Image (cartoon, rainbow, N blue to C red; front, side, top):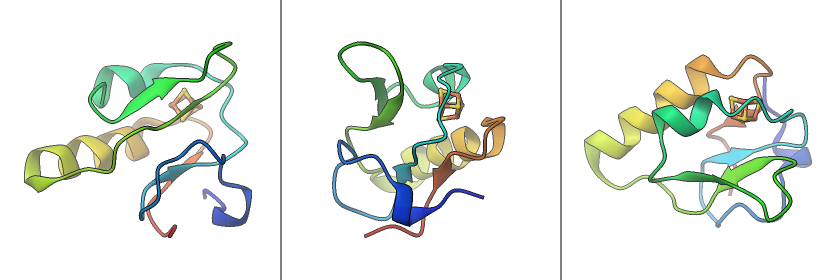
Amino acid sequence: MADKTHKLHENVPGPWYVDDTCTPCRVCLDEAPELLKYNDDETYVYFFKQPEGDEEEAAAQNAEGICPQNAIGNDGE
Ligand code: SF4
């Protein structure tokens, strides 16, 4: 389970976040490329945009579900 006390500081404010256990394996980027991207040196990914609307919310949920590290959470602030 993702830990909001370990969320990466690059995540935009809002409920969805990636925490510091991201490897990064990049599989979530295929699920939600409109929401998630690599940091500059590609050592992790983060939410550069919070989901808006049902389609993007579903994409975020798919990314959360597929993450092998459980690094994606939606209880942040
Ligand atoms: S699926 Fe999880 S571990 Fe893999 S890049 Fe995305 S957030 Fe990181």
